[in-house]
Image: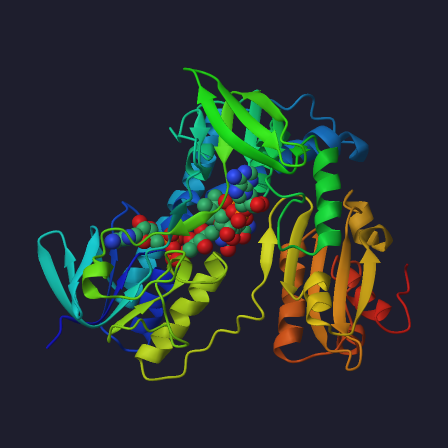
Amino acid sequence: MADYDVIVIGGGPGGYVCAIRCAQLGLKTACVEGRETLGGTCLNVGCIPSKALLHASHSLHEAEHNFEKMGLNAGKVKVDWEKMIAYKDDVIGQNTKGIEFLFKKNKVDWLKGWGSIPAAGKVQVGDEVHTAKNIVIATGSESASLPGVDVDEKIVVTSTGALELPKIPKKMVVIGAGVIGLEMGSVYARLGAEVTVVEFLDNITPGMDAEVARSFQKLLKKQGLDFILGAAVQNVETTKTKAKVNYKLRKDDSEHSLDADVVLVATGRKPYTDGLGLEALGVAMEQRGQVKIDAHWATNVKGIYAIGDAVVGPMLAHKAEDEGMAVAEVLAGKHGHVNYDVIPGVIYTAPEVASVGKTEEQLKAEGRAYKVGKFSFMGNGRAKAVFQGDGFVKLIVDAATDRVLGCHIIGPAAGDMIHEICVAMEFGASAQDIALTCHAHPTFSEAVREAALACGDGAIHA
Ligand code: FAD
Ligand code: NAI
């Protein structure tokens, strides 16, 4: 008899959710995690700590820019950086301990240490070999490196170093105008750093609806972030306390440089499968280093599955969680399902940017006929009351059927509002269905309804 029905390797959002669901479905389950705490990248050095710093720095921004307008005279707000970092660490601790509690509650064994797979059905952790009917690889991802740029996590940092800098830098250069670069760049810009974002492409946030991306860049510029687009970083030179980022502009090959106290390298992440022994096992891999899986998250080796950042698809915590639940259902003999067409993406800046489904650019490329309904937050009473009138909701529907194909929101609470659209898309709803649904007043969500109205006879408050 095997020691376990399932051993999950990796205790991030993919792995821990998978382990809990397996246990809930009656499978004897263990989860291997080599970090000191559960929760993976997301809880320890990703989603959660970055959101804590975004919240703290946004609060400072509100105090500095909006308090007085509301008759709140707080004087000059002083930043105690050490305390801010301690607050962030406390938030991490509460969340990671929460997962440990959930493991105990659901009777998931945490096998502490780094796991490898010496053979199908076996997982080695330290000197011990445990047997399992099925193994799920959920080992996540790590920051991608950039040629000519050596990360020391002090002056040249990845997101991990950027979450625990010893002090707020005066000048920060961010390489990469993606999600990490813009979230962490916003944090330090609000805290007073001069932030310059250097991006290889000619636009920020590749893949985002172009109209939203342009508007997003303008708003970030207003908040003090500088952008150098179309720039290929050649290398970064460092001294003990400073860095110099050398780059070439792609349009004319001219050479330039920027000085910085801290350089954040945020040019993407790559799957992490080191030390698992996958090559010896003959587990097939994708060209870009992900574990190759079929539609049921199974690898080519019987009894070995893979999910989350370690497989293809968006590197998002909720995508990993959904796959974790779905593979658990499969292993319990049920039908696991993930709708990859309805996975929202959110950038937690202020304003937030959220999207789901198709962009206009994708629909044009597919040659599909569509209609767009747009509504600006300037016409939303609640948004104006809280100084958040910047941004808009853009709803895209099929021209013939009115069925919702995608939605892109830049504005307050965009990351929460997008789920109305996710549910609508799951149910195959039309813009008219949304327009006919009563939305409470005054809420930001009314802007979604107005965008839906704009797909038909017109928005009321536009
Ligand atoms: P991970 O969370 O990376 O977890 C894998 C775990 O496996 C790790 O704890 C690792 O220690 C462990 N492990 C690896 N190999 C072994 C082994 N051999 N033995 C034992 N343990 C092993 N996503 C969002 O959706 N929203 C966000 O706001 C967001 N913010 C982010 C901010 C930052 C700064 C970063 C870096 C990422 C962010 N992400 C966000 C992405 C998100 O963190 C990942 O998509 C998510 O963590 C992937 O989950 P996972 O379970 O696949 O892998
Ligand atoms: P990213 O893929 O979002 O952005 C990387 C950016 O760097 C791109 O704009 C790319 O064009 C640029 N780039 C690549 N090479 C470059 C070079 N040599 N010079 C200059 N620019 C270059 O990756 P990022 O921001 O590192 O994030 C990694 C992953 O983490 C993302 O896939 C994201 O899904 C996840 N994440 C999600 C968050 C969220 O959901 N809110 C927050 C943070 C991270």
